[in-house]
Image (cartoon, rainbow, N blue to C red):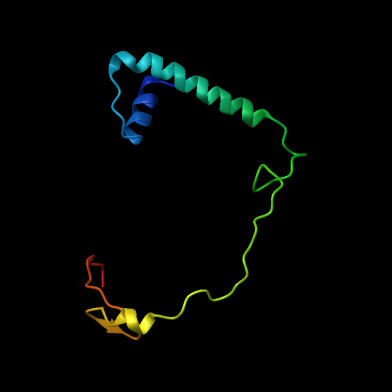
Length: 98
């Protein structure tokens, strides 16, 4: 895939990287090579390949759903400077439209 110098400058701007004029040709070649690899991957026939969430056939062990700690909510809320309905109240730090 051929890239113009202008397209390369726009990509660099969007990626927030500064590119010196003298390094444009080498960067252009490298990026075109990378895009060529994606073109090869895109051409691969994957219609017979099943989607998978993990490359290894493993199952995630789970633990029993049991309470392991006691409820210290009321004790912890005693330290809060401001509480309402069992929740910590904090000062507003971001103004919205409302």
